[in-house]
Length: 296
Image (cartoon, rainbow, N blue to C red; front, side, top):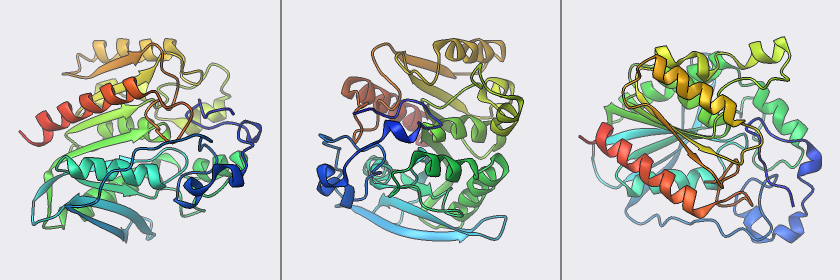
């Protein structure tokens, strides 16, 4: 079996799985295109939490769905926006929200891709990539803005303390959002692409802009990046380029950690790429940053 290793996805040949072989996990809501045959994903308890599927109006008039997990009670709780991988808001992303809620945060995961279709139940990677490609920079930033606005209207949300975290495709969005919105206080980017690949065409470079490596001077929040040393989709040269950009910008507290033995998707506990030690260390770094920036 081949695991997803590049943040913008793979070809369909990399994901020839049998839904029958995957058993109950497929029906439990995990992304079928990347689910490992022997996956044992983390399951976070929901007791003490309030969970909800909500929607709110985006700038283009679309009613944007989102999943919310927060502690029971009135709050107000610091807010964390959770940005998905290319597979959308499936069970792994929902569980990440519950983990954050158990840590005392109101986690909100917008469904950025569903204007076209929900990629979670799909097996065809070309179809998934087309859905993801339709979510351009301005649409995504508009959806983040709508999420910030909606959170500011909730009595249980402390919208003066906002973090953002994202995985794969969502990791790139973390860098972009932290450069755009002063309302964001901290970000954790998990293996998001930092620069266009050397093989990218001019159109591909333009379509992916702005690239995080060009945004270091614009960051309005402390961001930490978590990357795998064995990531075949994000070369270490681009990680080092981002480090240099942050150093030149004299960014306060922004840093990148590379886990030498970890591939792309090392936090995704439903995939073959899951690397428990790197995932656990990265999660502790996330909690430490959010504790310092969102709860102090």
